Image (cartoon, rainbow, N blue to C red; front, side, top):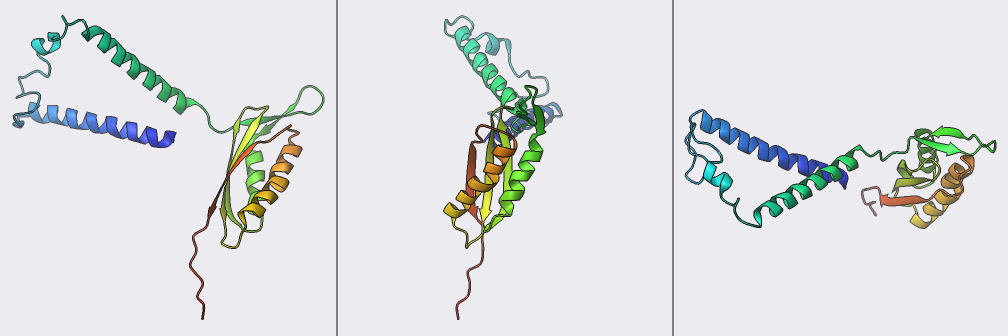
Length: 192
């Protein structure tokens, strides 16, 4: 979802900047703008003194300006935090029993989960991601099932096999998982 929001926001911001900047450049170079455009020629300004001070005496003007700017600032901060925040878990803390613990690379555990899931009967492809915290990781898996695979059986084998092995080997009390299943597109068999 965030990837779509990023692309839409960047696309809209880029489009607005290109259109406005290109129009100002074109008018500055002598192109005659349409009658409805915001400025008329190379010597015209975008905002005149009258335009800038038109609403200044109104009581609603400054609270509205401050509210709009505050909303824009909050949206920009939300976007920045969402982009900077790491989605993938870098490492998992394994309880070794000595009070210290050991660190297991998150990608290594992901690789094992994906490898075991891919070896299951009826699974054409698997993708995985570890999220959460070092002491409480969560797995997100996407499996592409072949036409003959039963989703319920595949899910049972995944939870009893790959997820259980990962949980036990990392000595985790629990390894919650979100598994998304989809089918591989295939051609229909011909019957003679």
